[in-house]
Amino acid sequence: MKINRRQFTVGAASLLALPAFAQNGKTVTLIVPSAPGGTTDISARMLAEPLGKLLQVPVVVDNRAGGNGNIAGQLVSRAAGDGTTLLVQYSGYQCITPLVQPVNGFDPAKDLKPIGHLIDAPQVLVVRQNFPANNFKEFLAYVKANPGKVNYASSGNGALQHVTTELLKDLTKTYMTHIPYRGTGPALTDLLAGTVDLTITTPPPLLAHIKAGKLKALMVTGKTRLDALPDVPTATELGVPLVASSWFAVYGPNSMSPELQNRLSATVRQVVEMPEFKRRAEEQGAKAIPMTPAELAALGTKERATWDRIVKVAGIKAD
Image (cartoon, rainbow, N blue to C red; front, side, top):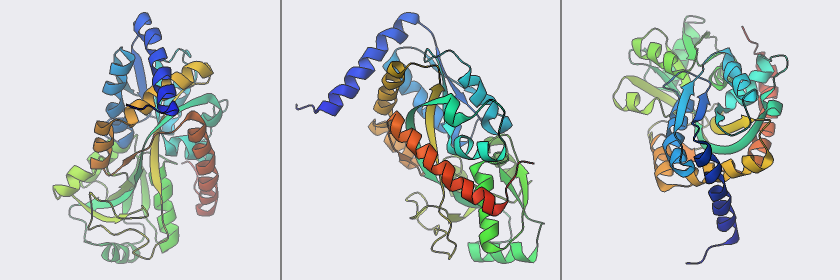
């Protein structure tokens, strides 16, 4: 079998990482900046088992919700740079939180070291089962007829769900009330209970509920329809120029050495390129996309600039 140079380099780097982790016998902790049940949590759990097998150590998930991602981010930024404490980060917390809820002495772009990208997913507008609308046209008519009476859930102030919905409000000239939660899981719990009317979030935590008829999907914010939801139109099809997706990636403390950063990056890439990981991502309406640390850093810089413009146009501020 012919092995190209890139495959050899990645494989060799990953193998070099194994002895260090296996010998120290320490557990690797994946810090998740939100409650269980959301896409960040799901992507971390998709990563944990195969990563542990490659590193030959236990890998556990630790949910640290709060502060719009700042609590978990600061925890990881201050951790030892030995690779045993990593952050599974959500793009909204990486790129938007610093714009609307900055913390003195902490900036995720400067204080966290990029390791590897996991998945990318568009967002889906879903409403509670008994919401008086069965498609986006009916939804829009109802919201316009009831300004301020319709409320929407998000995973927190400044989260991508919050910013995307505020942008939707601006584009459609509607008014809805924002209800922030400490993660997608709690927000989804209240949506299923009918406590809130809608949310816009990534497909993984939604699909089972949509297929069971417990939630109604009205719109997708991706460029194309989702294979998992072929009957749900895109915002562009509906005449709304709204395209937004979330991505989920792994970061470490800035004190981590470049050598260890590259070794961990190579190992994370191995996981993301596994057929089983790709299959699970696609089943969740997402796409597995590996990236180098440099590529991930560039993605963060680009998205932060994009959302900075939108935050200013929409006038979004932390409550």
